[in-house]
Each structure stands twice: as C-alpha cells, then as structure tokens.
Length: 59
Image (cartoon, rainbow, N blue to C red; front, side, top):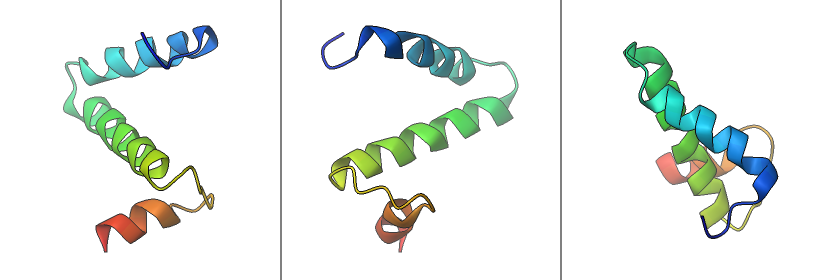
C-alpha cells in the first residue's frame, strides 16, 4: 500500500480485524480511532495530545 511503512502493517491489520469484529463495540471504537487519525492528519499533524484537532472539527 502506498504511504504505509512496513512497521505500520501490523496496526493496519489490527484495525481491519477490529472493523470486521462481530461485536459492534470494537468496530465502532476502531472507526472512531480512524476518524480521529484522519482528522489529525488533515490538520497537518498538529496533535495536541488531548483530542484538540478532533474537537475543533466536531465543534
């Protein structure tokens, strides 16, 4: 995959596994984590450590 480092593949596989989980709670948590990561990336990687980028986009 373009843009993914070899050491990140384990995390990608884990997220996919969680998204496909039969229990909806792990799948929803993984979806929210991916949404947060995407929003931080769009904000230029300015991660404040407390969800500030996510909260700015939601508010």
